[in-house]
Length: 174
Image (spheres, helix red, strand yellow):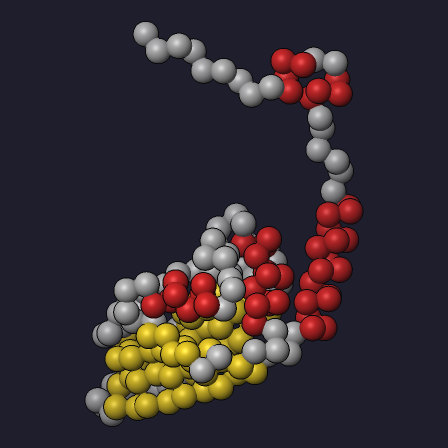
C-alpha cells in the first residue's frame, strides 16, 4: 500500500489530494489508518476522525471528500481510494486551489496497518511534504484564463424587464 498524491487541478475527473493505493500482489485489508499533521494524530477510522483532521488543517469540509474507512475495508490490487481529496461535487473545481494551499509547505504522515492475503500484518508510515507554490500559481492562471474565456452571464434586469430579475413566486397552497 502506498499514498499517492495528485494535483491535477480542477474539473470533472481531475484528482487533487491524497489517495491510498494498493500496489501489492493481492488484496489488502485495512486495520488502522491515521494522519499526523502538525504533531497531532487523527484516527481516520473513528467517527468524525477525518472531519476533525480536515478542520484542523484549515480546510472547508464542503471541499473535501469525507470517506469513512472501517476496519476490515478491503482494497483490491491496483484499487485506489481518496484519503484526503477534493470533493467530486459540482463545487469541487472551486476547491482545488484552497485544498492545495492548505497542503502547501506542510508535512503529513500517513500511518496504516493492514494485512495481506497471506494474513501478514504490515505496519507502514509514509511522510509526504508538500511544496505546491508553482502548481498553485499555474492552476490559478488556468482558472483565470478559463473564467476570462467565458461569456458574461446575461442580466435580465438590464433588458428592461424587472419581473425577470426577481425570483419567481410559488402559487399559494390550496
